[in-house]
Structures are given as structure tokens and as C-alpha cells.
Image 1 (cartoon, helix red, strand yellow):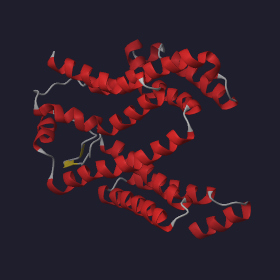
Image 2 (tube, one colour; image 1 turned 30 degrees about the vertical axis):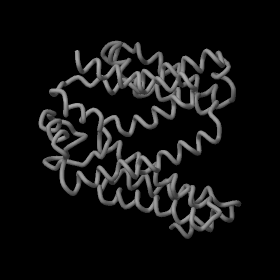
Image 3 (cartoon, helix red, strand yellow; image 1 turned 60 degrees about the vertical axis):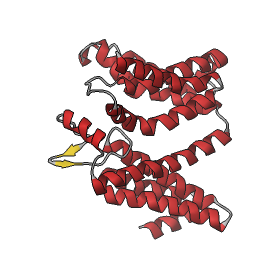
Length: 272
């Protein structure tokens, strides 16, 4: 019962900014998600271990509330505002029908999959209505949170898990997100090492993009230092998939920055 009340309090804290505006609610979820794994483990400073993790449904529930607000405000026009929106809506309908696929083991299995696949699709519709300023602030937030979360990850790499996280680790079994063979991986503030790696890749690419577009030398240097620091974190944690994603994303960023096909060809030759 105590755990349930704790999760309800967290859920209310994330959902409350929606009372101010849709963008405030989205911003709250973006703050909460990178810390979700850390908060999940930090609760064991006060509570005994439990196999249930309702904290993982906080963001999907708040996302559904935010989407309901958007649907009430914009009605069904959001599903066909652009040609791309129409195609995404068709894809969302297919995802919804897959919930009831009898070959996958029941509706509960379908709902679990919808939480991971269908719910994130709603963020596409959020992207149609938020301002450009919000997007730029959100990108900067990803870079800052990536750096801060990585500090905790580097602590785990250097000194090991803090006591409350070690307590959680001692109670989980066969958790592939933590261990590879007999080696325990750092998680930073995330729920898995893969989440940390992917978030760092996004932060690094955003930082490099801001650096390439900056007009002032100090701003450009600062963003490149942020991108380089996050790239170094990837090398330290040694996630091959994330490193490959960073290389592919960096090459794409460089090629998209060309102003002509000749420029694309020249940059491609330099990269190769």
C-alpha cells in the first residue's frame, strides 16, 4: 500500500504541469524519464524490495492524459493535418488492432506492447502543435540531462553501485539490462544500460548540431565540448550499438549540412 501511494504521488507530480499547459506537461515528462530508473531504485532507501514497478506506467498514463487534452482541443483534425499525419494515423490504427491479435497470447500482452509502441506514437501529434521555442529548449534539456545522468554513470563505473542500488541489484535475477555474463554494467540514472547509451547518442548529436549552427565561437566551442564529452562517455561504457548509432548519426548530420549535391559528394568522400 505504501508503494502504491508513493507511485500515485509521483504520478500526480508529473501530471500536475498539464494543468498549466500541454508544453509544461511534456517538459515534466522529459525531466522525469531520464530519472525514472534512479527514482525506482532510490525508493529502497525507505521501502523494502518489491517485484512490482508501477513507476514504469507513470509516463504512459500522463501521455494518455496529455493526448486526451490535445484531442479535446483540436478534435480529429490532428489525425489528418498533413499527409505525414495521415500516414502516421493509419500506422497507429494498425498498432491498435494488433492489441487484439489472438496469436500473441491475449489482450494483456497486446496492451503491454501498446505501452511501448502505440503510446510513443502520440508524441508525433504533440510535435505538430508545440512551438519551435519548445523544441529548442527540449533539445537543450536532453544535452544537459545526458551530461548529468552520465556523471552518475561514471560514478558507478569507478566506485560501483551506491548501497541502495546494490540492494536493488541483489534482489533482481536474470536481469539482462544490468549484467552481461558475470559483468555488471553501469546504468546511470536510467532503467537499463541501453537506455543510457541511446540517450547519450541523442544528446551528442544534438550538441554537435547546435555547435555546427552556432554563430559565436564560444557557443560553438561549448556545444562541441558537450558533444565530445558525451561521445567519450559512449567510448567508456563500450556499447557497440550506441557507438555505431553515433557514427551513423554524425555522418548524416554532416551530409545534411551540405547546400548542394556537389557538397554532399565532397563531404561523403571526406568521411570515407
